Image 1 (cartoon, rainbow, N blue to C red):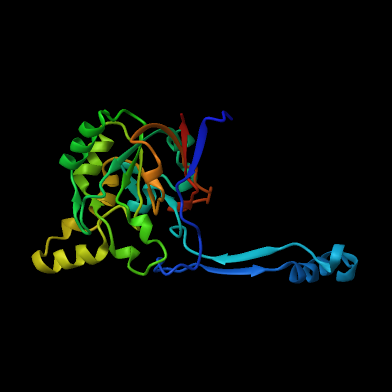
Image 2 (image 1 turned 90 degrees about the vertical axis):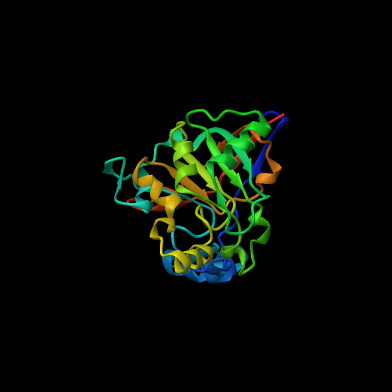
Length: 255
């Protein structure tokens, strides 16, 4: 790899964080406990192993949407574009490695909609035109609140129209550095209780019913990337039939 290439970690960790409403349960097995397991498998006393120690191991109970992850079309609905929606193991690898684009939406308030006009204004500011297969990353700045219980309630979110606008230009993977791709649920509930309009519920996700696409949630460090001119690699863990896969996306910047 060239000395002028930087790899930028765009993920948050899988951990028992207060930012996770469905908190992962992580149990670490240390080397002494591992020695007891190995002793049973190999039929030797644990003391016969180097230092009386064996392997370390971990047991984790979590949902596929814990930590940074890639949502498959199957998460949004059973069909996408009139056909059966893809599960995460069926997502084309070609979708997951391409040119990256960052849309800076840090000026938007918590609960704001990120509309088509916002995207057009940002692309005009940075002098970029979205092209097919770009991976578009929406920066809200909410990653700086990771670890806080308020994380889930912060940030602006995409709309049905802005999501479809990107899909119509050939984008197949997009993402955001907040808990969800839509606006925070607390804001959606409040608005629904005021006007009774159910079309605002999960509208950016449900856009995938019309056109299949994937999005990344709980990204981080988008502020370390340029607006464009870099690559993104975001291959998900391959889980048969799943609606999402854990992911450690990386921004690849060559200077």
